[in-house]
Length: 303
Length: 303
Image 1: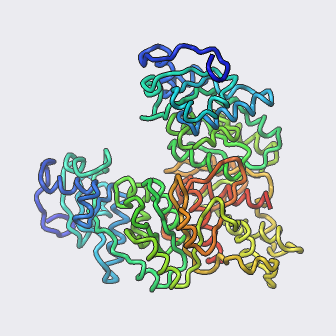
Image 2: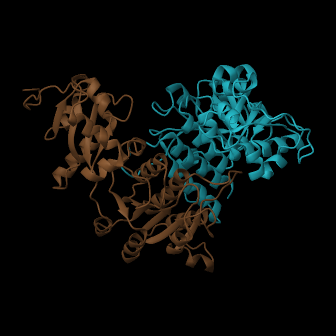
């Protein structure tokens, strides 16, 4: 028996074993699609995965973590991980086995095979979502991860990646979310048109983040601040009545890093909102633009 | 004579020539320190470098670009680059030579050897800077590039990297700035204490971006919006009088991605300002935090 009272399975020491190869294959999309699983690597990601797993279990939700592989050294160093892993299949393995499983050069002694989120947009909307980020054809894993992390920090209720966006479960994307992947529902593989229909039906205002947009984000923030802070709340002129209110339930659309949102995507939004550029930069990268937009909404909604 | 009226030098076709190796060596820090030069790769970066070069020349400033190497195919495809390069040494080279020079797999037919910025903090401050980003021990080139790009978008007057920060002229950092490196003065190699002394002497408010800060950025933004938008401008209570005003000339300190700002760095600031986290993220990455902070200042200063 190990300290957790779990029967001790034999140490995995063969980096060429079938089971090791199956885990390593999760770095590739075909294996992820076939198994519905992906790999989280390193103590930080595994800790977040296990915490999310426990929270889901407490609510009777689907399992987040399928199994964990760790070195004895890692568990000795970070005993809280073995604690968090109670009720989850945990196998001891050598450093060589961990290295063969992982995409990173050094997984720091622990990896978790996780189940792809089964969250649906319908579930998210039914629970009264007020802030959603929709990624349309974002292709770079690092950018997708940055947007997800910003959405988490801004308290967004969900992130939706349309079908043609990068696979958020690829190892680089998982890493770049720095654990935020486990903090909020992530809906993947949705068709753009269906997402728009569902958001509209739920009464969310759809704002397209667009460098050429005719609505200035600063103006929306100012109007929101005045509504929040002054008794009368009356600063605007007649034209302002047509502008979206950041306090309202909102979905933000963020587009491809090179082309931005397509004409069809822009047409589906209620408003096209520009983040102002004060300097001589030609554009914001999608991670930066998403940060500014989502924080503006979060500020207004949490006033 | 080529179309630009420049005598046609022989095509460079030997990827093992000394000159090619000297350019390639600029990917390494020793060569950059020795020569005071670095490499910008690809049409976007070279275009920005040449535009900055022309602007500097018009003002009698130091040369930004030392020399350009390009394939004939690239110049045929993007004739405006040859145009922009008038007055700069431009050598034709083969694809193989370009590939041997560049750090990227595909430099897309053009690279520029650039001179490291000679901007000093004294120059920046003498010209009346109102918004400065200071990077303290930021180590990841991608993060440094993201902060520089955010500073550019927010119209900051300069970015300062203290001596122990990443070298902004390393190829990955140059790439991640997406041209913003050429849009605003970048001061490198400065000692932290000297930077603080100069900023204080120039009357800038020094704000440390700190997740544990006791001043909430949202509160500062609200107070600023009310001052800007309401006739009386009186919303605050007595405690607010001690808070910094985002409209005032400001330098933001951003710290190491893992440890944040050190105690000594925090102590040097006038205030410690926290970007609120609305979700369950443990922290913002430095690029995201810098974006929110610099945009908050830009908004207040451009009211």
